[in-house]
Image (cartoon, rainbow, N blue to C red; front, side, top):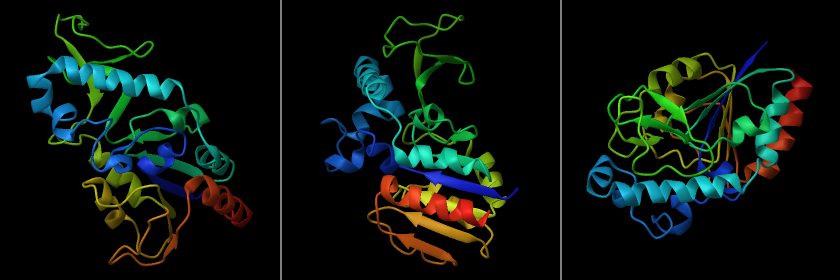
Length: 229
């Protein structure tokens, strides 16, 4: 069975109603990145950071997977599909995708400030000051903030190198290290880049650019790939 590796970004979630930095001139709900998505922000004002992610979590509970998410599930009928996502929502999982690697963390999980690998699910949408791990340390969002290392990038590179077909969906391809994953892919395989603002990626061969929203283009491409399987 051929392997399809999928790299998804904010665009695929935006079609479900998830708000992104791209939608508001670099602001996220009127907040600067530096105020809500960095280690320094957490040290300076953890209450603000917790409230910000609580609102993101609340928003997530109000939306649903869209046709692009569902199309990726359909591909599993004939392909080994592995998704590497820059998104912190769980829309891929809720749609039914079975292999999802979250490069930048997961919104519906928290982790201990004393033990970074101690991770807990969040029931509902609220995480507050005073919510502690069993060691008594404050819990923080299980998110890779700007300025932090991306622990799973090595695993993601290994997955990318195994691709027989690559799909890049809903990402600007300017955020590193995620954007660099295309460099690990076999240059001879088929590659598709779906995004309304997609452009040719310098140095990447056999790339078909599809300037369309994922919810429109991906179901069509899925039918084509299933017919060729």
